[in-house]
Length: 170
Image (cartoon, rainbow, N blue to C red; front, side, top):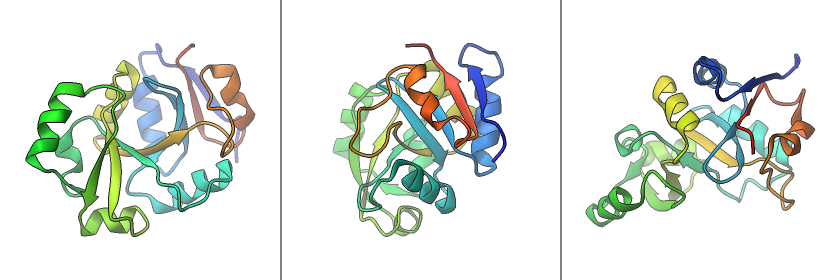
């Protein structure tokens, strides 16, 4: 792997560069509205596998699907009317809702019958998801069962392992 690109989230083209790397199968570390997260194209199973390997995470533990809006995940999940009301009230935000998967959802999630979905309340993530025009699978930046990265310094253990690290500050 070549050297990891480290870019500030405030950089005017950070969301564009990050979306290009993800779309091309790369692994990004991005700021979210909670902690830093690994992000990969939701439709790239190989990229998902790499994240599991990097973290030392069991594939029995699901990844979270982050999206810019529910429309972009309709092919992947079944959205009941009750859930729409909850989503409208709490999204964007830190709430993850669990939805049943469609047949396509099962394929991209390793056969899971449900997926956790969230619309993050983070300006960088929303811009990046808009440019990417596709949802991403995410999980916290850490070695499995260790403390999640809350600031950029804690993400640097993955320098030269991932393709891009977006510095969102603390």
